[in-house]
Length: 274
Image (cartoon, rainbow, N blue to C red; front, side, top):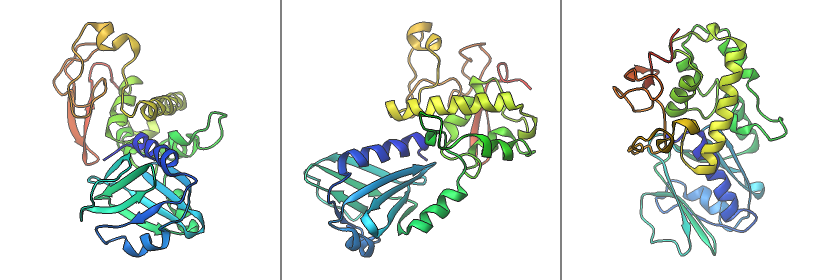
């Protein structure tokens, strides 16, 4: 499932390609046809992202709410658009660009109050922190985490606690902060939580800029360490994610993995001790 940086990157790409101009809207698959007919030819005048949810605003007609889930895919490209297929739930097109959406968990036209209700049930998003310090902050998440007996690794994946953090960022930020993933949330100190939040803000912003997840510090890159680059479908240079039984880049201890919160957790027993 795409993590939050991908959704925020998609929001920016939609604004760049379609924002402020009339957009052709269709649903070759047919499942979104009625809503597409209401939107066809309207101006896309707003985009928003919160956690793993993307919102596309069309004048006074409402918002298209998209959640990609495990199987959703977005294809963005330059016009002319390729021939349609019956797998395309939503197509946007103008004179310069097209977007095809396939296989999302959610693609629906919603009202402003419905959009606000979705925001209210998602935790603070590190990518909704503005440069001036306004917007989301980690306080709401801290209030939940600091009272919870649930492991910090599970809490970081709970979208009601924090929006947008997925399996990669979960594993990597805990490694970078030297925190055992099995510690209970209530056992974190405020200083540790503030460091986790600040690290997520920085790492996920970098993910938006580069459209990939890189979490290793400059001194641990392949060039700095004289090691081979990472080879994995995920891409990006990481410390522990999908590095099971490989030596830790810092201490050499084999990386471990175990199921947690319905996903595989990765951590270094040497660097992340209780």
